[in-house]
Amino acid sequence: MANTEAQLLDDSSEKLVWDSQSLNVGQRLTIPNRQVVSLSFKLLKLGTPSGTISFAIRTLADVALVSKSWGDVTNLTTTATIYKVVYDEPVQVDEEVRIVVMGSASIGPNVNNCPMVRYQASNVKANELFTYHSGAWLDNANRDCWYSYEYYDVSPSRGRHYALGKYKLEVA
Image 1: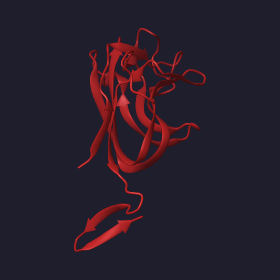
Image 2 (image 1 turned 60 degrees about the vertical axis):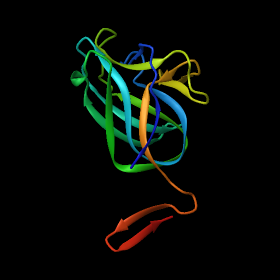
Image 3 (image 1 turned 90 degrees about the vertical axis):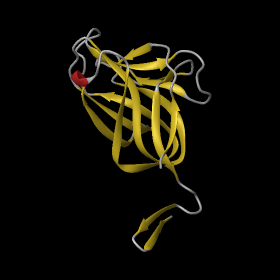
């Protein structure tokens, strides 16, 4: 059974995701030696947006470790709702990363018609930062994006163990 790490607080603050402001919005945090299997954000739409969104884990060097399309933003609700992607394969993470909602280049089309990500503007988690991309990555220590991810711990000495019938495979 997977474990969960989360920032489940939000005070109804919202960050727009659209092509003139920021196409990527999320949280900068350290994921310590875990295999991440899913990622969730609290989202809603304003007006009638177009485009698609993906949920990604990116290194601080801006390299995607994993990304999966959630789908068309027209399918988001107009009230804040938790949306989740389950990755096709667990991704090993043992570093500081950005977990983000990524908008397609055509998302929007404007400030009145776009998806929004919920965040908390008080009582934020220590050593984590709200993050977004607007020409360059910008971090805000006074905010936390609403997020949740499911993971499996990876023991540095034993690796993960998988049962295969009567045989046992150990992955270091």
